Length: 314
Image (cartoon, rainbow, N blue to C red; front, top):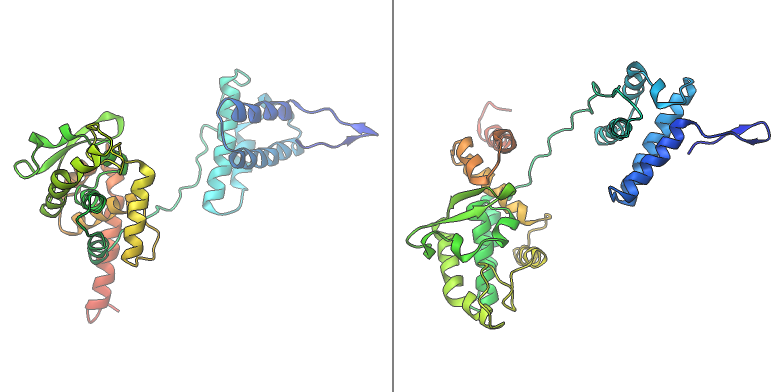
């Protein structure tokens, strides 16, 4: 905490400094925040407390809404940094309110700066094709890997949803007769998602020719659709490795994650003319506003094509 000299000795800590120490201890012991997060919050709040001291404010109850607001409005830096600083201050005041140190939250009317929307990174259709075609072979792991990647792109499922898929989630236990699966998303909400012909073929090859061999390697029949080389449920880490290996074979240089295929699915389906409400249902978004970010990607793509193709666009 900030310290200074009073005569020859050290000045006593203010109430603000003591409560800040309590808050940092709370973040460390009860909330389990990382050291980097705690260090950043501490720096933010020490600067805030120093500012309040310069105004003659030494106790939490003496902080006014105008003082908190004027400090926030005077902050400078990148939007992400400002957002963190404002959150640090608001969370500190919320803590003091919960601890009954304060009766009112003077930061209630303060909002962090709006961060620019981060557009999802999507592969082009040709890049997805190259990625999927890079995974070939008739051995059990190769058939499984192709089925997993085809499934992720065909359904837009989260990797956690794909890895938790069970045999019972395949409608009627036959993808050829009923080309759809039951996906369990966030909050245990279930949805039925159709599976395209390419993914159905890959899944059929995996389920009939690969999965039995992988499961028998352990001698137990696992319930999960996607299993590892030893017959147990496929891990998230191994799913990442499967995608990373496929990307290397396809010579794709951009950083990829399983979520990239989900982004690509949404972008391509919207670009193909699908209604946003349908895409919302397919992705399992609780709000259409979450899905709308993909329309921005599509509009940007259309704008690029228009500017390059129209003779009077430039």
